[in-house]
Length: 256
Image (cartoon, rainbow, N blue to C red; front, side, top):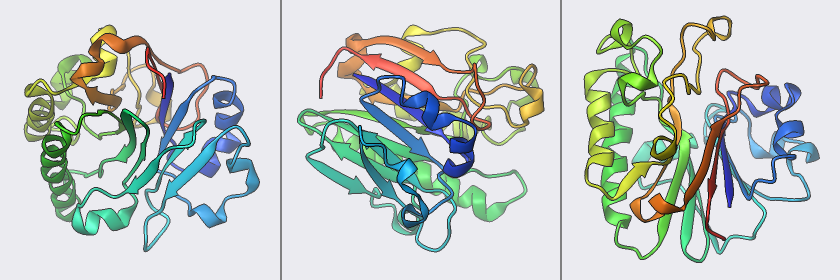
């Protein structure tokens, strides 16, 4: 099973940049997209390829955020939101359930260091997410959470960590502590880092013009620990630019 995750920063802009032309050639079973910046009913037929069943979860009040899952196989169920209160109105999580695995598309809030409201929202997201992971751990199924977590976990995930440590949002101590907590119990792991320890494996560049000097790895797939031995290949696609984020491609030795 191939799962591709991508933070589009506007699905229409990404499409114009060639994202769908590329991704439809990748033989993916699942395509998880975040930050659509569009409502589903605004999208033309070009965004609903025949090969896939497409599911969207829009923000209620505006076209910010928005997440989607494209799946070749018809899922048993689609879940939207994560019992996060008002955050669920912002189009931040959608999940497709299959026989033994659930796959989610997730967009964590972004927060600049001078925006108290955004910081509070981002912290709330983290506080909701970890109890959610704990709650579903014993549900006799595996989980793959694809998304932009808006956090770089370790020094290896930032191009110049000493310049950003506990200074730049996305690499603050309490944000990294949250990531430690998420992975520290042993029930979940960062699928990409199970195979790839490349210090240049970045997925996000805050400024497109700085791809040679300011890379971050904030996009990944967090998976149930039982899938550890099923991760067969991981990659970040950087040959073409579809947004400031790059697609993450992970192959698993499982079938839907």
